Length: 91
Length: 335
Image 1: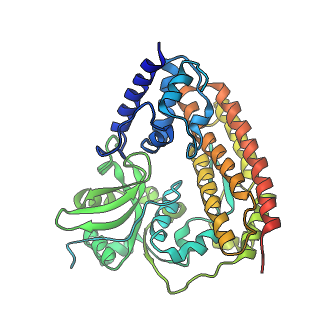
Image 2 (image 1 turned 45 degrees about the vertical axis):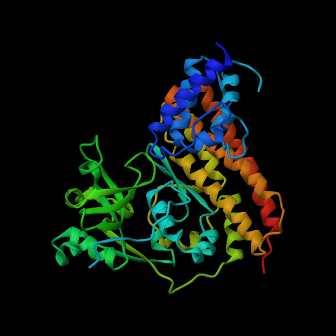
Image 3 (image 1 turned 30 degrees about the vertical axis):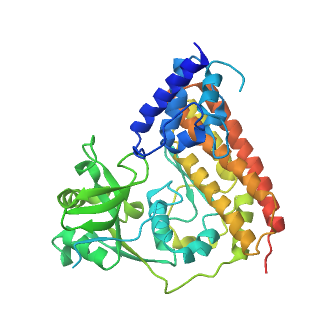
């Protein structure tokens, strides 16, 4: 599966999560490949963040770095970088 | 009488426990309370209860000892004697600037429960829509604000009796809390130093005022909390104890407050600036958050390898926090 395909699927999953989050609003910016994960995390409940990581690991049979579950305030990881991690590419 | 009234309420900085979150939600409206907050919530306490550990700041509940809060505690029998209609009583309390805190059977307004005695915080009303404004963790699994209809709240209040009224470790009753600036507070850096030293040694420097607190099961303090949490995580792995991420949420809140305390101390000349302690605590905060989220991940996946990661992170927090507090103590300016 290409990085673009995985990026698309990840964006879809994020959008589903955000729409079920109590903090979501229709005025929020759209999620793209260049969206920083820290901005995505801000729009999710903390349990949703963990669920999201576990769902990716299960769906793609991979292990993602623990740093995704830590403090992302200053992280520069983007959605496209996450797709690269999922398919085992170096970021 | 006002048709609606909402008392000042902000989303709190810390949300581990209802009693802390509610107090912070009030205090956040009054910047003058900052020195008191920065002078407290330094020591951590872990109480070994049967089958689980309860971690909280020492000491709790905040309503009872915060000089900025006027706390009136009423027995349910007293409330009943003076007021037959509980909703009118709550409206009157709010009109007198009192927030209301008590146990209610939230099964009357939270879906999916037959019975849910839980503490609730009431901070406003709307007579036209017949709703109270309330705060609790039960509405969407995190501390949040919601509205509850008068009728439901009335039923939820009257459904609580006997041992279900567990407020203040079984004392029960209703708390009325209002903001007061009549006492004020003077920051005490020597007291901060004593608490930090107590955190390192595991000694509770408030032990001498123990008569002011409740009877508890065996407790540990400060760095000793981490050793006990490691024991708990091993028990969770061995299925001898239920997994509970809340103690780690308290650790996150503790680090959040330390990250706020360090610039406060620097800005007020109590800590030599640019000490590097802030950066050190950012790393500790990250590890605390990681511990909490890894435990949630363990609850979802049951992967044994996660337990090892949590233990190694707790050990890292313990080591780094010991270093940072020692460094802070050596750089405090005590006048």
